[in-house]
Image: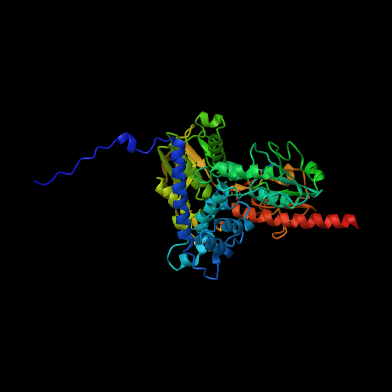
Length: 477
Ligand SMILES: Cc1cc2nc3c(=O)[nH]c(=O)nc-3n(C[C@H](O)[C@H](O)[C@H](O)COP(=O)(O)OP(=O)(O)OC[C@H]3O[C@@H](n4cnc5c(N)ncnc54)[C@H](O)[C@@H]3O)c2cc1C
Ligand code: SF4
């Protein structure tokens, strides 16, 4: 008879790893995940062919030295990768998260254009800087020596903050004025937290404060403090106020309850994310939960509203856009994300009015694309007799933003504006028509991108420093 193997009794309790608390286990997970992410970033970075014609770099508004930091990442030299990446970008981890890379660096990657899918530049940029934060490599930009001159910055969005960082590093006394209760501009209250986590923005503000930047919040320039008071108090002024006037629809029923503006809807959602009490959210006015939601518009703001409504628990989320998918102004990646999350796009449709108060539906006109206009873009035309009603309990208008009339609001007629109301400023030096007053970001470009605001802010800081140095040398003569 075959010999039976001897059974070994195991003291189950003794052979089990000791019980550990959740924090310790989650630390293990973080370590495993960090190793995985590091390997993944290195694998992606090593796909860069170091082509020698870095179209990625020339199509990045900051001309980031992408090939070099990809090489460092591929070799596991993350601190060096971080040093290279932060040398040209004030907020690399923010750009890595929210730049429309498909239109900028990644869309121009040589590998992408040879049909082998882009190197994921944005994700690697985010990874490098997040790692830098975790390891304490990100330090406040303290000046080597203080200067006696001061600059007032109106607007604490990415344009104003990028300039503040660079000016402060040069030793200038910097005060940033903003009408909101938190700094960050659209990084804080416009862009939703699922795209850009708010602690990522707030730690940057804290870093600027630690470097000595002064923030004067809840200060609406033109109301709480005059523009003249600010310019009288500082040696130079930077205007970085962005564009906030919503483009409205002129249609019957537009004032009905439940027809709201995108900026109000997104701001409320972000405030709730911060833990603020928002009465319009509590009352349901700016909350999509359990509602049939229709968003009007086809840009990135519309995509953010659609994806926020999904997360708030809307029963259905539809997007009305007057052109077709090919002609959407928003990033294709964002459209794809929205589709995957369950948004229904109703192409070539335009609202013609609203039914009910509170709103019950949107009157919709079907459109087709007609002859190309002077710019070569086909104009949408109404298909007669093809109207229908789209049921809705919440309608969000995301039709774009325009600048506020600053010369009137600030009683400053010398501030020249373009016919679109944006401030006239030199594109390289960012000087406005008023001596010592500079302007950057959306208030000059019209609604644009975070990375462009950062690029402008950095450039303007350099111009302001030249201006201050010149003023100092004249005074010394
Ligand atoms: C919903 C939404 C989503 C977006 N998503 C993206 C994205 O994913 N990627 C991307 O690259 N870009 C995105 N953008 C665009 C991007 O946010 C802007 O281009 C960028 O923030 C512009 O920066 P800025 O510094 O010029 O102005 P802002 O970020 O608008 O900051 C201006 C600041 O000035 C303050 N201000 C205005 N007037 C006054 C005043 N009178 N007194 C005091 N303070 C004042 C405001 O309170 C604000 O804090 C998005 C925009 C929106 C609306
Ligand atoms: S800043 Fe934006 S465009 Fe430039 S490399 Fe980073 S993600 Fe690409």
